[in-house]
Length: 252
Image 1 (spheres, helix red, strand yellow):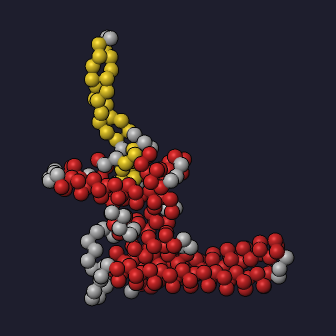
Image 2 (cartoon, one colour):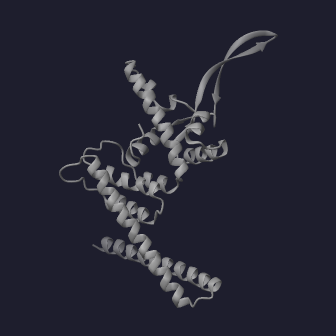
Image 3 (tube, rainbow, N blue to C red):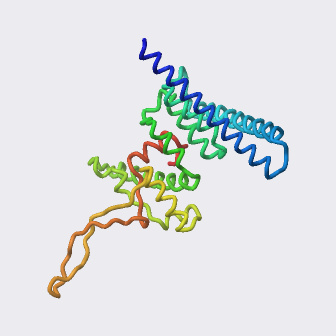
């Protein structure tokens, strides 16, 4: 019992600390806006609070609508699968703050996958941190690479290749040229997105063993080397595959 009381007390303290921080941040913003607009602080604070509350309510409403649409589209019947608060609350909290519809859909899909009793993919709390660090262009790049992996995987299955090693996503490179042409983006935008996706471990540079021609005492010979193609060719990781399956609409 004392342990439970201690845990509850700490939780209350953290909640109070978070609320206090939010209030202080809003007050600081209010004082700044009041200063640059010459409006009274009380007027500015009232406008800010109303606007922020409305925006958050609007985003929560859209999340609920999208969640229902996704669940209906999946044809889920019967009771939903219960999910722990440590997963549900952060999803709802972050989704209510996301003002981009495409990024909010990632949260809605993750929530739908978590409650879908027919979804047999992996649900990780790490997906929460990944979504928070993605921009829209990152999602587009990841979807292109995932779609290419899906087509490659289908071909392997049609060829009846049974060695599991050959199904590894890191064996399916997608070129920088293909991705930039499909999305109509520059190499710089592409590389920034790839850097971020590598940072969250959803993409990896393609590493391959290749044979090159060298000379030894003026005699040509073949030599096996390992080459990291970095930006020129990338591949989706196993984590990236699981993430897309859980958090994104079907890209195949």
